[in-house]
Length: 247
Length: 155
Image 1 (cartoon, each protein chain N blue to C red):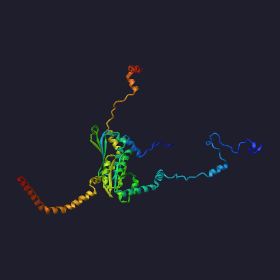
Image 2: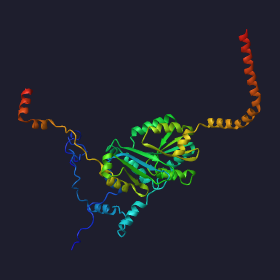
Image 3: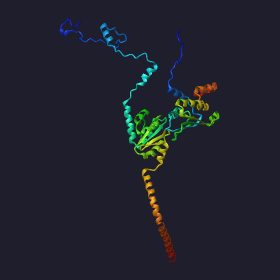
């Protein structure tokens, strides 16, 4: 105010500018605030938020049920369930293992070895697998997922041998069962499947057995002629050797 | 007048902390070999599988590194069992060669409680091998003459 009243010549005034600094050297007071003016206090009182009070008449059990009962379903679970079903549909071999307590290093080593063979090690929760699999043809594998587990997916069922070889070195992974070409196999059946020869070899064996029937007939018909030819050969060799000795 | 206090001062931590408490006191020193047999498609094998997992944890397996845990998978829907093959001293103490738990109708906590009741008690007591003496203890034992000699040597 004092700098508005002109007491000296205009340009010679040494008054400070109209800016007036309120704070100097930090330490502001927030712990003992000034009581607000009545009008301000009235506005604050009116604008305070009012929250609905929980009913005090319900029992502890009811309140606990309310707290734990309403759990919203996470839509991400549906996405992961769809991914699981996709993996199951597109891999011709899926092996389920029980997983004992294992280091992250060791499981990573197994994962790398499997990845080199184009096999994929995955693990999902039981709830998600249940959501993915109930109502489909894969429902029968659900009992395998009650405890700590992992799944190995592979596009080629002939890799069961490589899979067993890699997991034999890992004592923490216990084979429980698997799905091969949409057929559920138990552990023993999977081991037998691994010992079986490949499809081409099996086809060759089948062709051989089919040809064997016709082959035996032909052999039996030609038996006498072949025998005669052999005897004549031996006789001829015997004569030629005797003539050579004579000469 | 006030009612005298009745009830617990502390709330229990639930089944998980009960399992943890039992796990801390599992001692496999008296066991040579553990065979866990189950059919994964049978009913009620969850507790067996959980027990197998808990036996494979480092804390439990370090209580006896020589003890082998062998899981066996069968396919004939036979009920699950867990067999503990005891070492010789434990066999003499218990007068049996092996202990078998039929775990089809037991849950994980009960399995651990039975294990602590029957198996952990058969662990042979630990023998104190050479105790390493600290310098101060050695000097105390050495006595005045030894201490004096050491002092002159140092100088």
